[in-house]
Length: 126
Image (cartoon, rainbow, N blue to C red):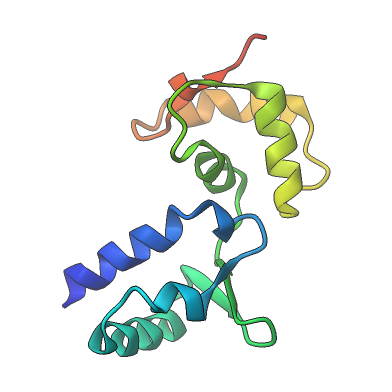
């Protein structure tokens, strides 16, 4: 069951709405069987990977660091995105409203050393 729950978490984490206003938990749970719903809700409360806004019923990312936010913007994109577009999308998430272009450029060298960062999906020079 653990591997199924990890797959469900990955599905939730790859949802663009998670970063843009949050994913409605009720709607997300509709796709799961009753056993998975119960297990996922327990896991959701025990982990810090996501946080649930009790008043709105929406799930948001637990960690909102810049790298994770950038990766979330790139999820599902087939072609590289210009840096200015990525900058605007990250600002629209609300997690990094004062982000500037040089902030992303400064972190690029650190991110490139990490093998799983999709560096080729960003047009750094536009």
